[in-house]
Length: 263
Length: 211
Image 1 (cartoon, rainbow over the protein chains, first blue to last red):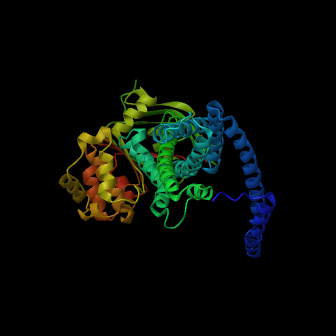
Image 2: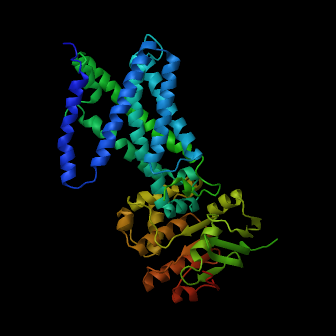
Image 3: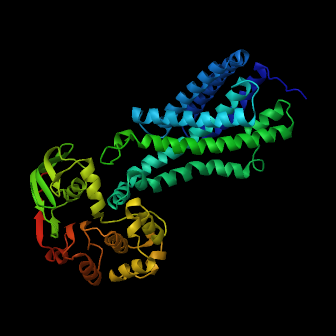
């Protein structure tokens, strides 16, 4: 069966459902209604913009243009990671985290798009943009958890870190337990969703493919691939994000530059 | 050129507007047992941080074994000097794993003790083998401190910076700690309010409060 297109009028009706959560949030004085309004408007405008832009990208289907779009997405994710990790926008963080996310995405894209799917056209928009977007969205979430856990835990337990240094540890040996903890915290949500996928929820990508007429078997193959890509991409970008930023956020005496942390 | 182990020369240090040291000087020699006394805020902890290279004085000079502090000197001294905070927190894991982790550092691999040697050292400090199988976070402050001391001792450190080493110990444990660490070849620099401990040190350094 072909997909049923939604008219703008039908989509408008869909917004009416927000009356229910808005009433509940208002009734319990959560103060979230203004946030709900802003979030709804932002979501709608952002997706409208992306929808029109993607139409244009798909039509042109130019590898350079697609690569530029990926760069912009990584740049936005870079700022969002630092802001949501409660860190300050300093060069010592922005550049390493951008490099880590970008490198992570390149590795995952090259492997899955070119080696696994074997696109007939290099960086074909129809595959590159949605898959990169899904991996990047998850990298962003994991980076926020991992990078925040690493730097705030290190700052909170400075005495432990310094004790290790005074026991003869190099800086990278002394941060090891904090690194380990950050990796665990950032990888756990994706591992949990991998363990329950299909049982508790039907993932978005698979749902989208089935809605657009793909067979469920094709949809699950893509879904398995995307889960592998997401997990590998998130672990790689958290690892690189911490590893690379570590080179720039410590003074020569191994003390963490606490100005990277928000007060 | 000084022959002292540490030579602090006319240092000035402040946190924001609060002066901690003004023209402070002291020399510490190899093998000395020193107790640093002073009111809260007088800079005892800051002095340790400065000695370990975690803080830099705004004026003055510090020498370690005659060498002025530089990144290399700081890294060298951290391999030779152990520091034990008053309330050691190594995380929530098993004590034995947390101690093992320290001996897995590249610099310490060769001094990794056997379990029996570790138990023997803990026994010398009045702790049983069961300490190793307990969660570190479940140990009392005094037990954690002694595990830390045993670790520093097994790392063969000849200079110990101890923050209130007897504050959480009973008389019997204090004696055991003293017997183990107040040896001729070990330099001990400690902060302490405990008259029992201070009496056993060679020299007392009183810090003024500039705050």
